[in-house]
Image (cartoon, rainbow, N blue to C red):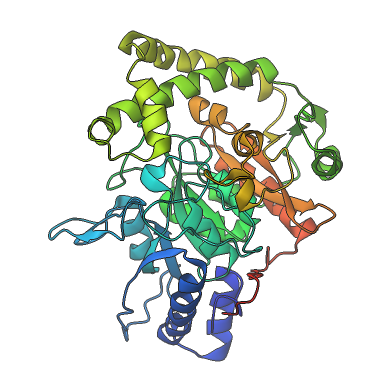
Length: 444
């Protein structure tokens, strides 16, 4: 019973109940597929042996195989952080978020590839094989949660934890055509997670269905009002259609969907511009402080070295002032936008999904505008600390997905996912997006 056969956790649960198969049998098949396709797509840095258990406890994620970005501490193992495959560290405790999922019954199959030090909008790496996009071997994979997106898109796990500092969950979700939730800053504890930018980092969830995002979130954030997840009728939806830089083929899909679901047009351009500028400064400063030693010793990748070196020149008082202003900017945005609507549909993708040659550094066909376009509308959300979900809403004429992001007030993930569920069901059906594996010349 692979994840291909059961596309969602709910489907797996129903199949186990009707077939009499054990969660252990289901895990064995999932793990075999995870091992084979993980190698094929370069999405795994470490595959853990499956420890069989005869106990079929009645837990919500029993029989569910997951794997996560290689940024989390695991029992006796320190993460590889995109630098290597991780290393033994006796006595190391497991990251809080991973521990909660395992307590709910999930089995952790392994660690997934990421951009080095979680600081890149692509999955390009120096030390490990670059993940291959299941949509096609020539298609770029976003970063930094690149392995998580590839693993979810290819169907080797139902869902995966990633992290988002300036779009690192939403960008790879967009490039691989899956869903990626950046949670409210501070909602999910980051204990046992390696920090890049403490003021901006948030744990996120990638999956092929809204239901599977919600399955993990109910474990990770049980205090939210999950009983209202299906209360969609009362949600007021606004849309921000900023088409100045958007490719006309992308705009055709985005405009149609936004106008269909959106009830009110809003234009938070001034909020976005101010928040984007402050986010860039805060991130540069904190990357410089966090990775100062690697930068000084010449060990940092080019992205970290460039951003962090700039950050080390930023005066501490500027950084403190940017953080002091943060609550004021958030309140102004919430009053202006969420005084009118509950969820805002906002731009995410502004161009056709790029090929690896267009956004991976060192290629003759590299186009800076394509790379910058990947995160054009991401960072400001991190500065304000808002929850945001990347969701594919259709395809361009060449059959590649087009995504937008849904944004809500802090700690309003439930309403955000409620709207996303309606969009998913209308476009893909209740079981979400089917896995793809279109890597030319290779089969799982």
